[in-house]
Length: 313
Ligand SMILES: [Zn+2]
Image (cartoon, rainbow, N blue to C red):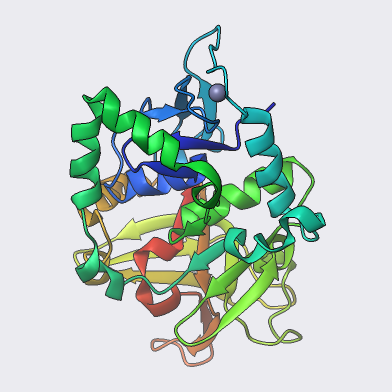
C-alpha cells in the first residue's frame, strides 16, 4: 500500500511527501530520513524520496518509502486504519464516519504568503532536534498523536507542490475528482485540478472568461540584470500573439529561501531544449512598444510572486 502520509520527526506532525518537499524548498526541513510510520506508537522508519530536490530534478513526484527492507511495526500500530482514514477524507463524499472531519482535510493552496514571512517561527525545528536525541520526548510526541492530530491539513504555498498534486492525479487518472481550494487575497475558489491547470495551446483566450489559473507550456528562459524572461513556444488557441512571462529579480527576494531557489532557477537558463513552465496568473494583452501592431500576451505570476512559477523538464 502506498504510504500517503508519514510522521515528520523534525516537525512532529503528520504530513504528505509533497508538503515535506515544499518545506525543504523553503529551507524548513532538512533530513529526508527523519520520518516514521504514522501508526500508533510506531517508529518504523520512512524515507521521503525526492524531498531534497527542486521540481525540475524530480523524476517522480516526492513520495514515502519504508526505510528498511523488512519493516518492523509496533504491536499497536494501526497503519492501515490511518491510511484508510486519510484516503476516505480525500474523497469528495467521505463515508459518514469521517464527514465531520472533511473540511479539515481539504487541500488548500495559498497564493498569498508574502505577509507570512515576518511571522514564520523556526522554534519548532529547534525543539525537535532536542527530542530527536531523547527517546522519551519522541515517545510522548507519538502518544499525543491520537485522534485530533491525525488530521492532516494539506496546505501548500508553492506552485511546484500544486504541480506535483496535478502530476500525481494525472498518473492515477483522477484529475476529475481531485479538488483544491485556492486562496487569493480576498477570495477563494475551489477548482477541480483539470480545470485549474490549463495548457496554453488548448485555451481560447477570447472565448473564455479571464481568470487566474495555472497556465503551462514549453518555454525558453533568459535573463538580464534585473529580470528573467520566459518566452513560451506555445500560443493560445486562435491567437497568433507571442506568450511571455517576466519575473523581476527584486521580487524574488520576497519569498522564503530565495537564494537557493534563485540558484536553482539559473540552471534552466538558455537550455538546449525548451523546459515546461507553469505559471499561476492571469493572461493580459499588451501592445508592443516597438511595434504598435504587434500584441504580446503576458502571464505573469499573481502578485509577481516567484513561488507561483514552476519548471519541469
Ligand atoms: Zn507502523
